[in-house]
Length: 71
Image 1 (tube, rainbow, N blue to C red):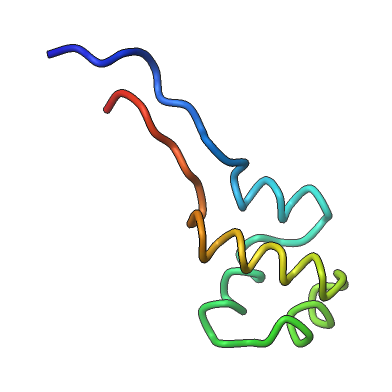
Image 2 (cartoon, one colour):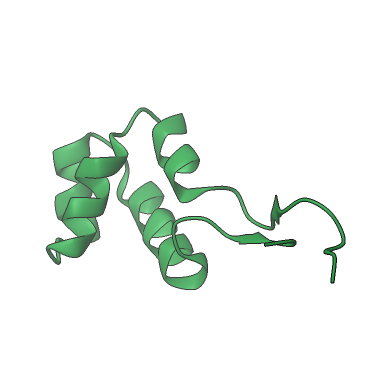
C-alpha cells in the first residue's frame, strides 16, 4: 500500500518558534522538564512570560513537532 504523499507539518515546530525569538531550545525544554514556572523560564531566558506560556501550551497540545502523512 502506498501513502498519499510526503509528510507535512500541521503546526509550526516548537523548536523553530522558540528559536525565532532568540531563545535556546535546549535550555527552554530543560526548564519545562525540570518543572520551572513560566516566570522563572522567562527570567532565565530573557523572554516574556506570555511567550513562554504560549510555547508551553503549544508543547502540551502539539508536542515538539506535529507531522502527519506518509510513513
